[in-house]
Length: 228
Figure 1 (cartoon, rainbow, N blue to C red):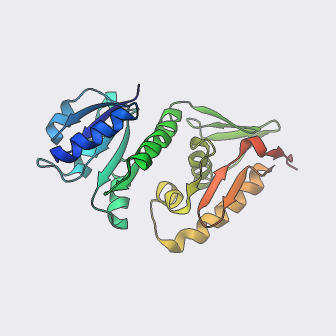
Figure 2: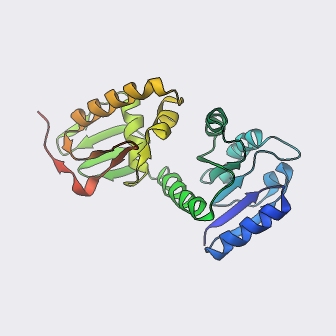
């Protein structure tokens, strides 16, 4: 059973959310303050409110990331602060995702499951993506013909897509996680990197464009074309 640490000082909201999550099969522990969160047992997912009485949630997120036993824990910020600048600050502080209140429990559960897939794969250094072997620790990519040379950003882009196991990653998420910005002017840079990455990997259909949304890897539908 997936263990969730819910850090929320609004007792009524916390109780309602905990009940909904438990009915969906999650095991939930609740705390009201940052101090209690820092003393809590490790969990698979932390749902973190930003408006805590004793510490800002951004600072708490950074402190949780410093705990050795929270190394594999997914952190999702759940806050009424829904502006883009706030989401960017949250992700930069160490959160894996950011959900604005009010929220739908079904969406929150889906986001938790997606984040867990990603965070659990962080600790598997070698990923198989179609005919490719992506080593996250060594930051190398190879196919049957040998190593494929990628730039740092090209590898970061491939790694983000690979960790999502075929799920769609929005353009905004890619900009935040690879370039640490959400400025729309960077979209052209993203498109250029995707095009170059496709060319270097030489695997037709591997990186799919989801029009108006973003990109995803489709290793099951990919066909190796070989490299010259």
